[in-house]
Each structure stands twice: as C-alpha cells, then as structure tokens.
Amino acid sequence: MTNMIDIINVKKSFGDNHVLRDVSLSVRKGEVLVILGPSGSGKSTLIRCINRLESIDGGTIMVEGEDIYSPTSDIHKLRTKVGMVFQQFNLFPHMTVLDNLTLAPTKVKGESKEASERTALALLEKVGLKDRAGAYPHELSGGQQQRVAIARSLAMHPDIMLFDEVTSALDPELVKGVLEIMKDLAQGGMTMLVVTHEMGFAKEVADRVIFMDGGYIIEESAPKDLFENPQNERTKEFLAMIL
Amino acid sequence: MSLGFRPDLLVDILPELLRGARITLELTIISVALGTLIGLVVGVCRVSHLKILNVPAALYVEVLRGTPLLVQVMIVYYGLPGVGINLGQMPSGILALSLNSGAYVAEIFKAGIKSIKKGQTEASFSLGMTYGQNMRYVILPQAVRNILPALGNEFIALIKDSSLVSVIAIEELLRRGMIVYSRTYNAWTPLLGVAMLYLCMTVPLSRVVAYLERRWEIND
Image (cartoon, rainbow over all chains, first blue to last red; front, side, top):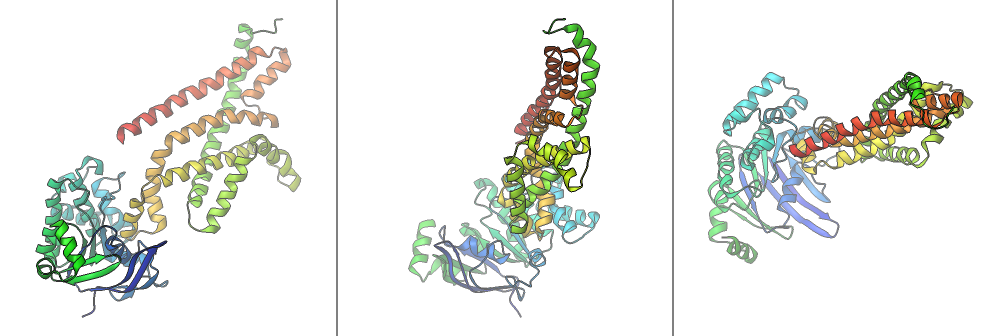
C-alpha cells in the first residue's frame, strides 16, 4: 500500500535561518502523527510545506504519490485533498458560518448550493454548532470558531488533515471541545498530522510521535516509547521541561 | 452698482449656479465610478507578484499622481486632438478626472488589500481556491469594507478638483460663476455663491464618511 505522504530530504531556509535541514518522513493512510518540538524547530513549517503554503529549497514532497512541488502538478486540486486548520482559525469574517463552509465546495468543486449546505449542516452538527450556522465568526467564542474551521476543512472531503497548533490560541476551558473533535476524526480513520503541545492528546490519540529540533527529526516512535523512554538527550530535555 | 457682496444678485444667479452644480455632480459621479473601476484593476495589479502587472500599474500611479491634474486635463482636451482623438469637452473632462482619480483609488485599494491578514489567503489556498477566487470572494469584500471611508474622501476631493475642468470651458459650477462675473463685473457674489454650493455638496458627504467610519469601528 502506498503512503499518503512522502517527505524526502526536504530543506527549507528563511535567509540564513535553516528551518528544515534534511527532513524525511512518510505517513500511511489513517495514521495519526503528532509532531512535537520547541518553538523554531521547524514543525509548523514542515506541515505548511505539505500543502505548499511554503516553498522548499530542496527535496521532494509527494501527496498520494504526486509530487506537489512539480511545476506540472495541479496544486489547487491537490490542496483540496489536504485540509488545514490554523492556530488563528482564519475564518472569513465577512461571511456567516454556513457560508464559510460552503464557499470552497461551491466555487472550487462546483457543488450545488443545496448539496454543499446539506454537507455543511451535517458537519456543523458533528462539531456541535448546527444552531450557529447563521452566526458570524466574531459572534462565536475561540473554541467555537476553531470547531467551525475544522468543519470548513472537512467540507472539502479531504483525505489528509493538517493541524497547526490549533489549540494554542484558545482559553484553557475551550481546548477540550476542539481536541474531542480531533479525536473523533482520528477514530474515524482520518490521516492526520498534528503539531501541538497537548501531551495528553499525543499520548492518547497518536499512532506515532515525532520530535523535531533545529530543523531535523530527532526521534520518532510510538507515543508510549517516546514519553516513557526517550532515547535522545534533547528529547529528554524537552519532555522534562514540559511534563 | 456695488462691487461687493449683493444678496439680490445672488438670488438672481442662483438658478444659473445650480445648473453648474448639477454639471459638477454629473462629472464627479461618473468620474468616481470610472475612477473606482480603474483603481480596482490597477490596485489589484499593484499587489500582484507578476512583474508584467505590477510594474505598469506602479508606473501608471507614479505618472498620474506626479503630474498636475490641470496639465492632464489640458493634454486630454488640447493634446489628444493632435493625434486624431477629439473627444469634446465633457468626455475629455470625465476622462482626465477618471484617469487621475483611478491612480489615487488604486493606492487606496492596494492599502485595503494589504490590510487583510495573510491567514485569510492561506485559508483560501488550503481549501483549494485560486489566487483569483481568493481575491474575489475573500480579500476584496473585506478590503472594500475597510476602504469605504477613504473612497468617500476621494469622492469629496474629486468634487473640488472637478473645478479644474472649467479651463476647457465645461460649464460646471466654477465656470458658471466666472460667466456671471464677466457679465456683471461683480466677482464677490458669484464666487461666494460658488464656494457655498461646493460646501453644500462636500459637507453632507463628509458627514456620511464620518458616519461610515464610526459604524465600522463599532463593528470591529
């Protein structure tokens, strides 16, 4: 069985700052991968490369077997297969919740208004916000906005979901609701890459945990092994600081 | 006859001045509409990463803002016929005002587009939208809302700047006033009337702009 994502020797720098030095990683279908690491370790940049929100300086990234940085690849079509949720939600503030969910399905995929609204309402029900379909983003709490953002990504029926520190901007009491939805998604078989500082989520939900530092993947293993028996000194230091 | 202010003369010439004010408003409204269209296109080109779009757009803005509107009006009216393009008075006035306003509006659109957070574009892209779809459905609707007060101010500026087309004998408000002056030799009365009528147009508009600014602030 082919991998959903293959990252091969990827390098990326912002000027003199080498954010990704030589990163290789493969993700299987249905796998939930949590990426840990100190700030500046390159973990957010890595997942932003998977839907080409960043350019890369070397290496190859394949999504479902297709080289996404190839000039001949249809990046817009590839991006519809890869959903992404951001730290700052990035909902469209001038649209209602429902319109946030139906915009891309209708404009990008050409779905009918009725079909996209049916899907949207079903997804909003799943994230517990069906009654807020007519609300504007600024009328919602941060946790609700993030749940809408997840639903908005899911409305495109992606094969892969990327989560970039999606609970970092939330008040503590709102984090749980968002993590619950991600857990449901994982149990439903979604392929997920999750950059997070939520160790509980990593332990409970991840199939594999990756520790990054200084632009390299330092260590990768099952969550139990990584948390209870880290091999690398820097992993140990990092875990000692946050646990 | 007094050369000072004469209320009786003002009453007499008011209908004539009002006809001029009407031409001023027509000129301004058409030019604002065309200028906004030009400004939208040039502004979107300004923020493009494609050199073939942003370089000509920058040049356009530079030239139109760097030369006097009065000179532009004269080039269109007196210069273009020399290369076989004879537009006539009103179209010349409208063309010059629209092209000039377009340059200022382009800068307003550019600022409005740049004021939208990068995360909005990233969200659009991550959903598979193209640059154009992102611009049309996500960025511009938000940008327009932010720049409405600035566009209103541009409207007000254009009402005043339109007085410059009096040099090509368009009988707008100022020109009407000058016609009265040359007929009666009284400058005070028609020019005060002219100034008053400009105020009657600009003051309500600036109130509308102030209202819009306040409303957006509350919404934010």
